[in-house]
Image 1 (cartoon, rainbow, N blue to C red):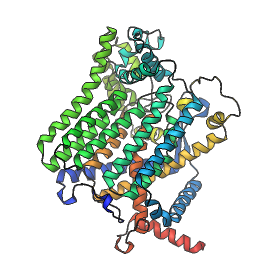
Image 2 (image 1 turned 90 degrees about the vertical axis):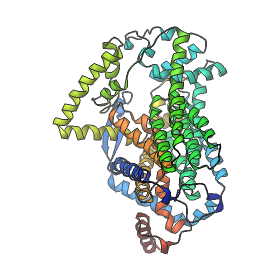
Image 3 (image 1 turned 30 degrees about the vertical axis):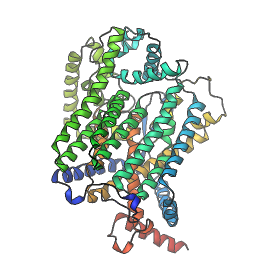
Image 4 (image 1 turned 135 degrees about the vertical axis):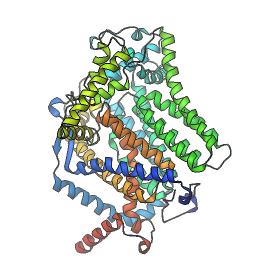
Amino acid sequence: MGFTSNAKSAKEKIVAPNLKKRNLVELICSYGVTILSLIFFGYVAIMSVFQTSVIDPANFGGEHILYEKDDLAMNFFLLGAFFLVIFGLRRYANAFLKISDTILMAGLAIYTVTLGFIWIFMVESIPAADSGTVTQTAMEVAKDNYNSFITSNNEFYNNVSYYQLYPFQLGYVFICEIFYRIFGTDSSMIMQVVNVLALTTLYMAIIKISKMIFNSKAVTFITIFMLAGCVQAIFFTTFVYGNLIGIASAMWGCYFVIKFMQSEKKNRYLLFIPASLLMALSIIAKYNNMIWLVAVSIGLIIYVIRSKKWLYLVSVAFVCLIAVGSFNLIIYSYESRSGVKLGDGVSQTLYLDAGLNESGMAPGWYNDLSKSNYLNANCNTEEANKIAKEDIEIRKAKFKSDPAYTRDFFSKKVLSQWNEPSYESLWVSQVKAHTFGEIEDGSLLQSIYTGGWSKFFYDYFDFFQMISFILFAVGMAALIKKKIGAEAIMIVSGLIGGFLYHLLFEAKSQYVLTYFIIMLLFASYGLYFILKPRTFGGDESSEKKTVGKYIQNIIMKIESKTR
């Protein structure tokens, strides 16, 4: 890919497209996605220094978001201290780089599994709300009970079956059903165990993708430590939903697509089989991962244009067909087994309407609008869409007539998601019941939720998020000049897709955690870019002036004055 470390080794050589072979389409896409991501996430990076979005302690269960100003002096002090420490440790970098990637990956896997299991079995969270509904249904269908498809005793849904509104949830029901049939239906803990394993496999996929995109052991090394620092993901494993399974499957799907792009073997087309199945599993687990299917399609189309192997356009259709077809097949299966025709359910138009309206939580967060409009239309998707489109036009007129309101609405919507540093990772278990009953005062769990450890973790989340966004912005700025290929364009396109989707459609900070995890891949390159002239065996005299060089000069001056 052209991003190799200056400390090259034979082990780092992989089949990668030469910059000279890239065509105009690939170059335009490279500039497009890197500049857009720098604009979108650069804004979040800047704002992360000045403010933090937090869940209102007075309305914690209601997810009401507050926008608090940060202590700028403290933030700048922490940033300065971070870079001082990093540059202070740079002399040991090459020693660390002698450690095998396999050993480092194994260490990360053991670390993630150990902390994940400790956390989920300490919390013993009981699923509730949507998570509780799909979990209960999965337990029932595992015992061949399909009553939940016929009707609902919940007045919140007007006694209409939950799956008439949200048939897309059946994908995760299907995954849960498999595990409940194998391990029994006495507890939902098996799905939390699966979450821990999914997070671990997600990390392994990200590391492998890092190696294939950047071809640098140094970047891989930094990526491993950045992933280890993302404690929010560990806490999120208690959330019994398809987020972690879905994103892990999507990233492994991307891995096989990238492996196809970089392989020269004649039978490499066989890699589309695992890629397609994994993308299908991703969408089954979490329907919003259609964003990653689009990103994969973009990457493959760019690759086909670059290589001029037009027959491989069939691969795009193959991946999409398997992924989307598998999802629809699952819905059909449940309709057939239950004898209930579920219909189309709440559409994306209804979610767009909800995402453009106010909410008691934050602008564009859940506001009950999509469900209410669908029920008011007697579960007729076409009629519900008409209602939503009329409301969307009203909102568009409001945005057009009041620019100040529009800026405030979308700014708060973006920051309420991306700049809420916990991403509701503690919230998802704190607001739920626990199998052991009430949390004891003075216990470690109580301290993590509301005591001294709570302050420590939320302060850590805030700092980790801030430095990650800053490093991501640096990485994107560096990659504008480097000109990324189809492989990296695919991943960055997924991040941009996630940003734009949740800018317009229904939002929550927990929805963007999976994107934040993947951003660490490029944040790691940002840190590498800052460090590489003096740290990873580089020839400083041959380096052009970069952001990293300027930062190093400043650090060197500080060090010389403190000796």
